[in-house]
Image (cartoon, rainbow, N blue to C red; front, side, top):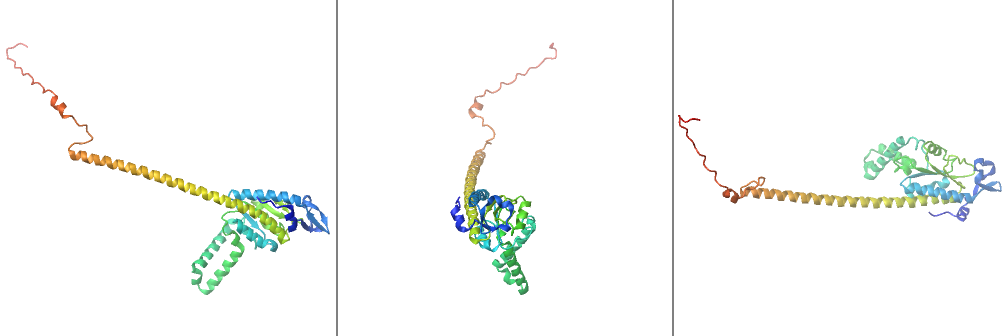
Length: 308
């Protein structure tokens, strides 16, 4: 796991918070001090908490789980998309559709519709539609691509969620809390850190600051996810090889059994052609010849006057 140093966080401007009059008192423990009316975040705590968040993200990705990257503000939009695609994770960077998590069954129907329209475009079916229907279908496809393009491969609610700016993403945070989904959050001094499971205190308004934290989480998730996929592929190949060996062994035994049965049938036919049934034991000829002939029975006659 690539650890982000305090120097890198300092160069990215992660330590700059909001104005002191806009702060949330619950962030007091993460604030180092104030300068020029702006709160300064304690980067020593940020370094430790970011490492814990990386460990958690690695555990989720290492067991085949999914992490939903959410960041719809302009400063994090492009970075969220790049990092999620690099790690093979779903993302939302344009607009959060209400109920994406809590009403996932309905959202899943729209995802299937997006796949259907995409197949129409790739297969040439779109060009065969009448002009008005084709324009309507293309507009529907573009709208779904903007809102659901990042989660088109998500078949179930995610195992964890990474959020940039809790104030902007209030609705997704509320849905994740309702479903008990752990949240990794880049939390600024004006936010409430209570809903977040893994708080990463830092500046969420600067592009470089958002990129530093997002890349730190995404790199770990990408590494563990690729390792998990490699292990799964190796296990699949091993399982297929084992099944192939078992099939060959089973076929060999069946061939031997068939050959033995054919040999028995052939021997039976040869025995029947020779004039005796192989099911009855043959009686030696010499034994029948040596057996003595039975002596003739003596016949007696009785006279009528003979006493009994």
